[in-house]
Image (cartoon, rainbow, N blue to C red):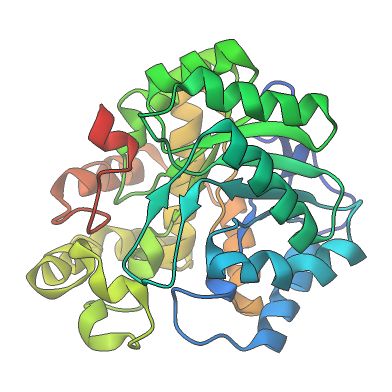
Length: 346
């Protein structure tokens, strides 16, 4: 394999392994985002979702990603039986800081130390663990000094409740500031052919500090697969993508046209558009000198197999050149409200 990994697994067909960050855990070079198994993407077949977790582990995926906000704790509870059965085989990541209430439109952010100490106990209880492998600050509240938040997270490491620390959607300057308080193992931010904000400053800082990158939505929330062209018309009422600016209306039509080079390259490789998009993330990370473990989300066993196969694809320089302009031509923001993203603070 040729995707910047530093080892292979024992069973044929498994993905390679990589060390997440300079001193982090060794994990499969591709992880699994579990958010959609509980909400945001329409109804879920629980049995199929559980089968997907098993399929991921069989494929060599060992980094499983959740958050206390997904399903307001339901996703952590859903994962508990799987975590219990495979605790020594997986690296478990969860997050704190996004607050939800009974008002479906409300999203708050808390980074204060008292809340962090409360949140970790809730996640440990729902997951059924006595230590969380990788604990992220999901979003940054600029009103709370970063040193206070990371200091509280560092206390969790000292207490044996957390092994490694992560941040999500922070700028390069914020990553450096946090790392000076306590080593940060992973940065989780959106990174794909459609979303390259993270390259402005955060990727460079991560390379400098030895922080691993964990790209979420590496398939552009499914848009890069070519599976739909207008979320507002094609997806169910319960799917949050129906309200994402770049996925609906005229923006969706314009963005769907940007997929033609992706489809052309996929055909040349006998691959899917999704596989080429995932291969691009792996190779783009190498350009920047960072370790990367994307966490595409899925609820289907077949998608696990498809996504894992992407780690064995190498794109040529001409192919990379064809894909290079895409992000700069995307119409619409990646969220309806971009205020809590790193891009808003650059």
